[in-house]
Image (cartoon, rainbow, N blue to C red; front, side):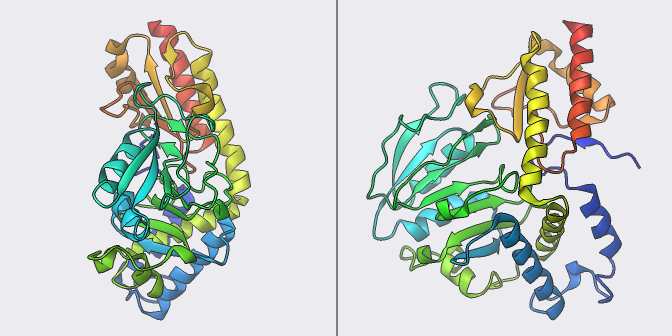
Length: 360
């Protein structure tokens, strides 16, 4: 069997070693006589899987003891509502950065539950940059500050963590989590959909500081209350058990690879290799400001957009798939998450160079 290099923005590639282990265990998990998909989420077998997954994640990210780790459902999009419903209670306004498509969706949803103050927007510049730290003013009385460290669609990434003082900082890290070390203590809440760097679609991870777990807004459904999930160790209802199992295997794989410091070195090399190929070419272009370029999602355009389908067809024939840019942006986009090997980036660069020689 030949594995393709899948540059999808999500669901994305999973490490081959993880898939191979899951294949070995799919019918019988460690002599239990059951697949993980068949286990009771309250049985001792699955409880051990869940406990190990959380312990490995805490080790990987150096999560402080005063943070809860929740394994939920609903995608990062459910967190667009859960965050204001749980945090904007005594304080009714929140600060938001608008740096791209996912920021815009978070802002639109938050407006249902609180007053939103957009402290900075990159919309006029076609979402091609992030703000300088001097370009915005935060409200010291805000319930929280929300930002998207990495915008998957536009390939825009914050090169720093905003300083929010005593106001809780909330981050949608769906596209960047586990790609490098992170000071979790700088954040009030970190949330992420799994389908990029964690595991398969269907699992959502939330890391929340314990003092932020309080009574939510009146009328908040039980499933949208952090306190209920925290008090029940993510077992208030049946969680996405197989997704949690696969995420646990990914955490094991990351630890075996040397942890997030080692992953950061690899990810930086991959990104530099691809950006260098774009910048050293007169045929390809990346629209993002240099300091705001994403390590994870690299959009690029061709000199002649009419060549886009030819490029995509040729790439597919070389085993390089899912390179078409998002419909709202166009062009190409290569998502190079943790599971994308360096050989995949090398193969893409080689194809790009050969394509340019033929069509420039």
